[in-house]
Amino acid sequence: MKFKMAELFCGPGGLALGAIKASKLVNGAEIIPVWANDIDKSTCETYAMNIHNGDTSKIFCCPVQELEFNKLPDFDGLSFGFPCNDFSQVGQKKGTDGKYGPLYSYGVKAIKVKNPSWFIAENVSGLHSANDGKAFQNIIKELSEAGTYGYTLNIHLYKFEEYGIPQKRHRFIIVGVRNDLNVVFRVPKPTTLSPESYKTAKYAIENPPITQNLSHHELTRQSAKVVERLKHIPPGKNAWCDEIPQELRLNVKGAKLSQIYRRLHPDQPSYTITGSGGGGTHGYHWKEPRALTNRERARIQTFPDDFNFKGSKESVRKQIGMAVPSEGATIIFEALLKSFLNINYEYIEPRFGLK
Image 1 (cartoon, rainbow, N blue to C red):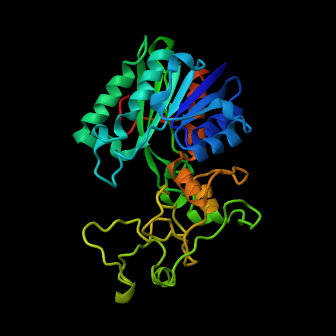
Image 2 (cartoon, one colour):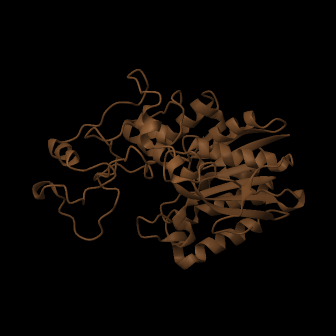
Image 3 (cartoon, rainbow, N blue to C red):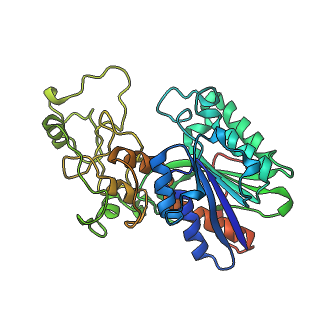
């Protein structure tokens, strides 16, 4: 059983990497990435290098609006982590009224044209509440009714720290299976329900130790004032903690974002790694007064050390932050393949979603 997979808004390849690894874990089924799309040139080069051995002909680097799906190669499965900017808890939450919110509709269009056996869509937890919940319900309706046969949806808010990912990253994953296939996908049971068993940021970064010969491990230059400020911030706390002397405090009015100069706690999973970096949002080491390197971020996002990125340091930081953790994707794709092969696996009921 072989599934050709296409991908929209592919990023550097977290979902594709997970699909490839899942194919090695499940005998009798395989997912083969056939083409992908993204708008960012460096991101496309990263994907092509790691997923298609450098073959850039299999990635269409252009705005998704320019794709003509009826002229693109057929696929049996579609993955798309549609842009989250307008659904994120940080920001104006314009939802489908924003610039990026409506882009989910191109996943719907691709499904209508190709009628794949399944699709996987991913977005932030804020998707549920944008536009007073109306955007979420509309997206669900359009996805379930797409194509010739329609799709049965499994919608779940995955907390990736419950699946062995060293990061508190919460994302909606919508798995759709074509109705005529009579295949039932269920949410795979978490592997680490107890917080005491969560994989920590320290473990991810230090096992094995990162050596200087690994790519993307260069340090970020920081001002003396930032370094001094970080020295006063205990692990797990941010720029608003009481331990910071008055002269080093930020003069910020309004909302005090929790991510600002927030240091990792060595004994807990990392907080969510994002693509931003300005204004103290790089992510910061628990012991050393510095920002994380891109290789450290990549480890927290569970990219293997031989996964290399194209582009500037800032571009790589954004690529890593926007990706789906590859090990988390593996777990979901493994369950999907087992569902099609009618192989039993432990599961739970969906959280905040339809059965």
